[in-house]
Image 1 (cartoon, rainbow, N blue to C red):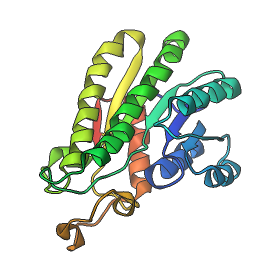
Image 2: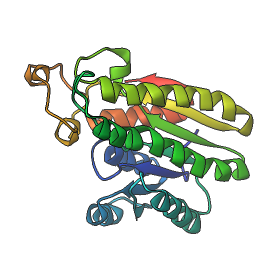
Image 3: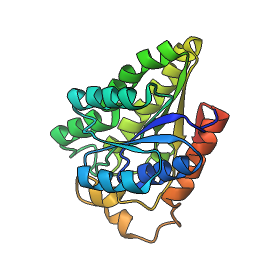
Image 4: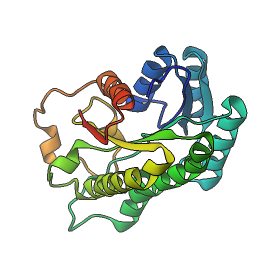
Length: 229
């Protein structure tokens, strides 16, 4: 899919991969809708990024999702691509993981994605098609102690995405997964729980958020089921 003049909603757009993706796709001619909880940051980014629209959104709240879709359609009249990027990590062993914290992460990393997909699918069907990209994680290719809870959310996301891809093919709606590896973002700072000891050891060189953004653009262009960064 060519992103020129496409309307693209990006969640978690105030920093990291979401922000880098918004900037990159805007440079390629897309109209980007910046969705995140940080209203002041979004408003400043709206001034900086051409053809952008900032909508304060907590993706765990159905009322905010409804507002996001309503404002986007009022401004642009369509939704061509949804990029579900908002998410958070959690550190702990399976033995000790706090279930209330795990529920919060599931709500953000999985349930909100389903809600957003269900919110845009009717509009995409109405307009004849669209694309949904869910941001997964390279942890689904590994088994890392201390990341069982986070990994579980991303495994769930993968399965939902691949099955939705088959279910929505008849409606010309493409569902894909981008699978970043280690990326230089604030993931560790924002994660719930105590950082595992292994995370303080020397790590492989991390990809930049800008590199992941470029690969997301490649995935939009190829329309493949998954792209592993």
